[in-house]
Length: 514
Image (cartoon, rainbow, N blue to C red; front, side, top):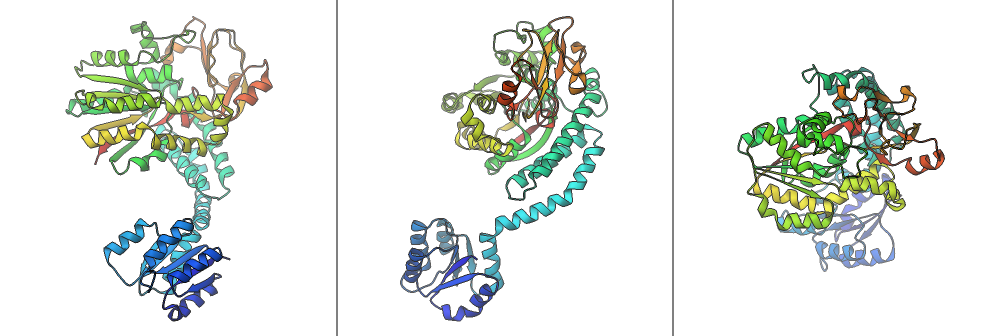
């Protein structure tokens, strides 16, 4: 039973209201003044307080201020005869839960109480009921998805429900997780059946927008129209992470939201270089061998991004001034803010944030971070917290203040893996857990998407007999040697490089300053 304190100098006149609330199962304690209310707050615990604003002695506002000092967690509903704006402003500034103007009827009071005491359970109940109704439709959509637009809409729907259910206590998570697994299996089959056609025939009907076309379709038209553009790429950035940070930017921007399809492998070396060059990896390696880094090279795989952008501008005969900045830590972000004015002379400014990618890898390596991001919801929350408290949000606000457009995207997403798949390779096989490239790979072909002719899919082949294999769903590749340790170490980590909606269907957002 919830206990309510109601303070009003005319409390006797409110007996019908109080009896009504008692009939609804609430215990109501009354006070005739602000001083009496404060004394009662010191003596016992209350779930909610109702305060009359116009009381003799301590006013409602004065009482509210003192209550907030000792019990800031208790929701307070203020009731007043006055419609003066300054009183309302003061009440809101003191973080009241609700503000009602007399005369009030019992049902108004009850509604406000329910909103403040029972909203979580009511929302949970309604959300659970809504998802139950959607369950059958989602299962049907999984079975009927036949093109990439179907899959994008289905993925949006699954992300929507994941975020709705994770914010409530519905206990529907397992049911949704089952549907996500079902969707991942069907999506992998869809990619097996269609991906090669998309690469071989760029004009294929139903082909999605893919990594090499991002600049051509979204950056160049803005530049041609005389717009100043910031191209911001957040590594390892998924649709649910965008949904988490979107409210932080809503005051400054309007959004045009799309999804595009990352190429395979969904890894920086391939997907990000494809964005910046406008080419498939095989073409980068053949046309600009000095800018391509092979898998077995100890050199960093994303060190030539600025030169690759320059090659794309030259190839499309764009004579624009651009900058490239990579932000790996807070110091680099602060440096960009200090030098922000220098960017305003450029037609295009490219900014790469590596935080989420580093978080993903740190989660694999660090037990503490692994515990902090043990679920998709926790991982998403850490991403939101980073954006809120880092230089990133201030950079976006600075851009908005100048009225420039932002193209916000990523090179690939990431997926939480939990199912090991055995694979054997020689010492030259790459270490990524979601894709392998080698000439002597041993695996079960039914468990992977295998590519025996890499060139046909726009991928470089270090050797004539090189084969690529891609993990699907939530699988990750594990070696038979020391298998149990390997599985225990990587199970539940976030990985990328393979085939899943989370990795391949990624956000592409145009932000226009308000």
